[in-house]
Length: 159
Image 1 (cartoon, one colour):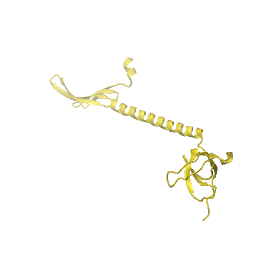
Image 2 (cartoon, rainbow, N blue to C red):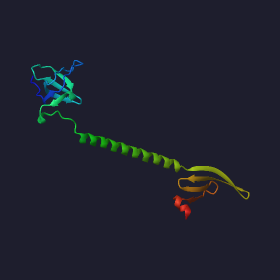
Image 3 (cartoon, rainbow, N blue to C red):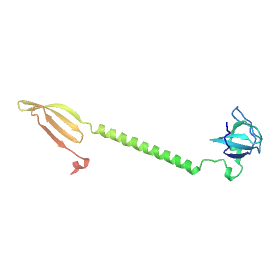
Image 4 (cartoon, helix red, strand yellow):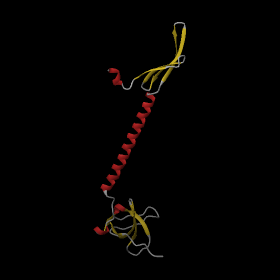
């Protein structure tokens, strides 16, 4: 089985005592081979002979030189991710508001009807009075005629 090559080298700025079997105890100024970078931790092997790998806190290490620097996430990239998330949240909130307004318009435009009777001399007329959806209408059950007055906008009433 072949050995996985290290990513780079780093130096311990402080001594660290492991607190679990997965971690590695290191001394100050120890030279470490880095095999993996995982958020706040580095998977390393101490250069001085041991073949044991273990995790050490990333903040305890400094790069050996510029070319071997342990990469830290680019702040601009992080800001772009946060801004993209905020934009998505704003768009989702706007869509929820549009949906809410559409529901309100549907409820607002609901047609209400009432059965009514009218005496025309000795003759009784039955019908339905309806209001809503931009219209006021009367539909006669006796004459089978629908009469209506339609209103398009609030501004139409002022003319």
